[in-house]
Image (tube, rainbow, N blue to C red; front, side):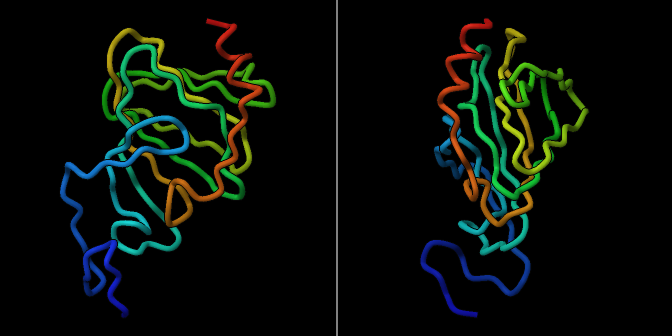
Amino acid sequence: MQKNKTRPAHNGVAVIKPGQTYVGKQGFTYGAGASAETVGAKKICMNILPMQPGAVAKAHYHEGIETIAFMLEGECVVHYGEDLHECVLVRQGEQSFVAADVPHAPRNESGKPCTWIVVHSSGSDQDGIVLLPELDAKLASRK
């Protein structure tokens, strides 16, 4: 295995310490987890997404990539579909699945912080992201 200066060398098992963060295209600061960037993962990644009250992701989809998200703390509404007209409320302890290529935007409408554990079927959660700015305005008008 070649050494990569952007991630620690390991022999197939790695521990990711808390405190590493990055800003994603979706508009949030994530807690870095196991990913291509941290451990060289190729087919799966997991990161932490804290959302403050009123926070909303940029509307987007993950091209060819599935998403599973576990609500660790709090609750959040996920708007989804062609015009983000559909929505589901995800509560603490529940999981949500977003199929590949489905437009979505989580919005914390609860008035309290929430924290997601997010898993994607790719080595990086930033892979395959297609932003949909035309849907951001539509969602903002439905506050």
